[in-house]
Length: 247
Ligand SMILES: NC(=O)c1ccc[n+]([C@@H]2O[C@H](COP(=O)([O-])OP(=O)(O)OC[C@H]3O[C@@H](n4cnc5c(N)ncnc54)[C@H](OP(=O)(O)O)[C@@H]3O)[C@@H](O)[C@H]2O)c1
Image (cartoon, rainbow, N blue to C red):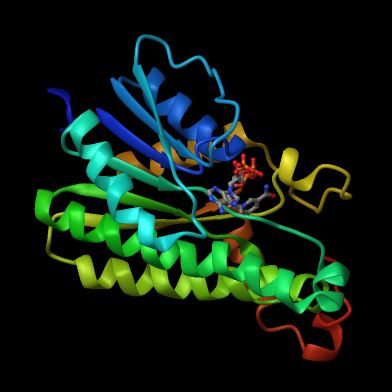
């Protein structure tokens, strides 16, 4: 439940080693969250500084939807009501490699879209039953208009963004909400070795924007915020130009 000041008390991070997800969870802990649950594939657990917050770990594989219900059950046992569920798992991969390996491409979409559909529906059912709580979905500008240079990842993000909008509409009036986050290029592990795109940002900047969005009950958060007007124009570019754009 939210604490007496109305701020976030309990957080479930799906993709418990995500740099962006950990930055968001860390920020919410500094702002008063007392229980943080990191759900990730088995492996070395991160040991981030969450101040005085209790930190728990759960196994979670986005590619195994049959196991997702049990993850939410376990999270509720650990924390009670969940104020914020952050869906931050995802794989970027390499477009040229995907074009050579359709199975790998399909598997990445399984994580980036199907995994979010399953986890998102479980989250929505739980938050609806609680009558409060926010599902934070890490979408991307890559899905706002899909580019030739990364269309496998971009197509999954476009599907995810649409799913998250519909899920938010389905939850309207229930007390539970969906907040869609559309970052541009974020410097970090996922983008290591890639040339930074214009207006590149950082996991901490995404975390600040998400925390502000949660306070404001925002439906969509662009990071940086100027990407919103930029993409309003980019959406209108003729396809002959769009297809030549780099990732
Ligand atoms: N970085 C960017 O430029 C950027 C921009 C826009 C949107 N985003 C989105 O923001 C989210 C977080 O990205 P990030 O920058 O924090 O990347 P990251 O540090 O690479 O985190 C992605 C996380 O997803 C997890 N993951 C991948 N497959 C999984 C699976 N099958 N089951 C469970 N977890 C799985 C990874 O787990 P392991 O630790 O086990 O590998 C990893 O911890 C992603 O959805 C990404 O698409 C990122």
